[in-house]
Amino acid sequence: MEKEKAERKNEAKNQATIVNPEKLNKKIKSIQESGGKNLHILTDFDRTLTCGSAMTSLLGNGKNSDHNPLSYDYTKEADKLYHQYRPIEVDQNLSLEEKKKAMHEWWRKHFALLIDAGLTKKHIEAIINSKKIKLRDGVNKFFTILKNHNVPIVIMSASGLGKELIKKCLDKNEINNGNVFIVSNLFVWDQFGKAIGVREPIIHAMNKDETLLQDLPFYYKIRDRENVILLGDNIEDNAMANGIAHENILKIGFLNKNVVENLEKYKQHFDVLIINDGSMNFVNQLLSEILEN
Image (tube, rainbow, N blue to C red; front, side, top):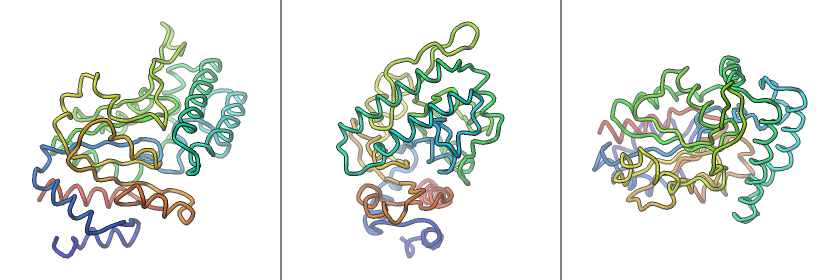
């Protein structure tokens, strides 16, 4: 494909690892044949659209939990949960069932902690205004390309502060367009804007896939788009496209930390890896090739 596309090659040398160039080119060519009309995007949010160093979900990890507006007690307890459950989430030696059970426990405990701490809509506004949430370089261009070609983008996130935070973040960056659909946890608020519960089902890192979309109003906009570009930072994110038949699934993984230890494992699950908290430049170049061919 024109010597693998010079720009894509250069970008790959800088921050991307292409697992199997021949396989990737076949997927690109197949997706190109139908252009944008048969494509949709499935993406995680935390550490995928945001920088890997940003702890936007407020699950607490000491160093990054300083931007939350809740009490010290909340931070302390959230950190305990993080250090208890995060190693389970990233342990590639545990079974999916073991991880699902642990993640469900973590999310329930964390939501209860947030509610007990008195979470309000004003707290979410404060987090957005704190400028501690940083979108990955190139994300704005990513959304612009998809908007210009009317390609649906589904953000499927288990974020600890859910849909409200993601929506406000996109609104603030003026990228929450009509082709963007957010699937994430939703708090129940009282008349004063205080969180009093969480809507079922609770979405966590191990149970999010396209079967969640079938009862949602926008599902008809993606159900016949059989080509998918999937983006995520956890190996389990590559399962987001499960549950619905697809013609092509091109998977891009963001390996932000512990690259040496995890590189080979990630290669088994993704077509391309963006390493060391790299930008979206490779992804944007790929989209331009597919949509502007």
